[in-house]
Length: 84
Image 1 (cartoon, helix red, strand yellow):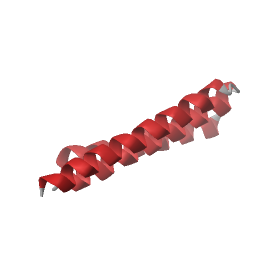
Image 2: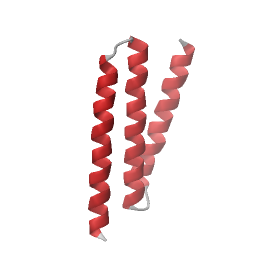
Image 3: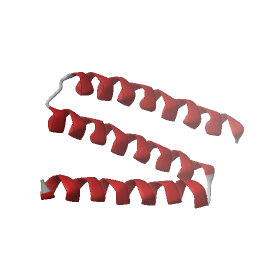
């Protein structure tokens, strides 16, 4: 039980730092990397929920979210690449 609380606290701190980088990032590329970091952390959190609730449905949701977040990162990267 305490391990779960520690894991969730560390995930929260990780998301906090990534969101701060997204808000005050010096360049647009830093913001895209921070957004990708937030997406990876959220995917890991969904997998942790699958373990905690012992439900395989969460793993399917995590897989779909990971694919969509990867495509989101590609779209933002292409947009920033074309802007230069």
